[in-house]
Image (cartoon, rainbow, N blue to C red):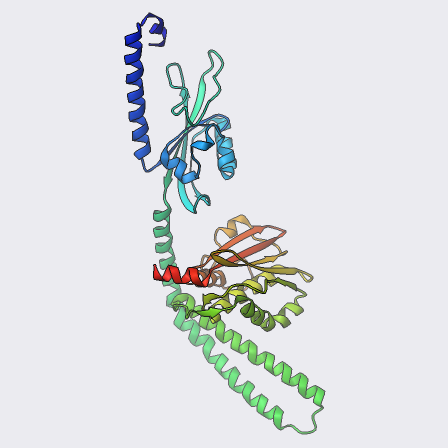
Length: 395
């Protein structure tokens, strides 16, 4: 048809242009009603076409016309650039964080825009370079399928199966650990009474013995709490929400862990604004979250390590970031961080972070973990503000 253009009269050209316009409009409407995102990329990552679903999933619009995909979604470059360079197909599940957290199945396949093939599906989104005469332009079709709901359903089913296996052990664990702890508690109370009755004991020795005795009692109480939290991981109770000042809860937990942190040579720095907003939370459950995170950080660091805890707030959340300079977490372990029984620590039970995640979910909050192996880990907790939480509950 292109070869015959010079032989066509004006009415025929007008009719042909109108027909092409109608057909292009038809394809546009078809592509834009698809639930799957559709991208057409050049070999350098420039976007030649993007349907409405793709723009929605990746968070860009017509103002980004002619941009490369790497500028709009930098995280996709390490994944897609090698495939574009080698002109190979690729399929993979990825997670997008912008414009909202999404799980997406990505499928990329190369194709040739040979003679007679359109150079661009959407002139508004790209102005691709014209290939050299005789050269075969290579394009890549990328199909994005939103699998967030399917993945959530699958993850919940898998988690339910794992939790079911834990339930089978819960009663036995509680019995086997609970009985000796009760016995220890009774005998420590007897020792405490005997100590008070002793006469002629040096006051300094008596104080030292009393301090050691209290440490034993506190550790027994903590072990008893671990059992209780283990059972909460199996059958978590709804949080008893009340006005809570997170800075005060953090101070109580740090005071409780002060001796352990000092023994490990860990220095703690806390930065918290005086006007940190109140949140609705279960104080005991939040204590458990803080305790687990601080303990994990301390165990990941060598003597002389530093744990920085920084609190902040915005219009919707109160955030606390726990940043250590410890050994960090390997990427393969980071992906399994919240799985029950998965642990990299000798003697670890692999339930601590699962409990943390469940408590945060029950509070309507979020947890994010960033880690650089060999340099440290930062765990950020986000609690909804009191007014935001009330709005969520009322909605």
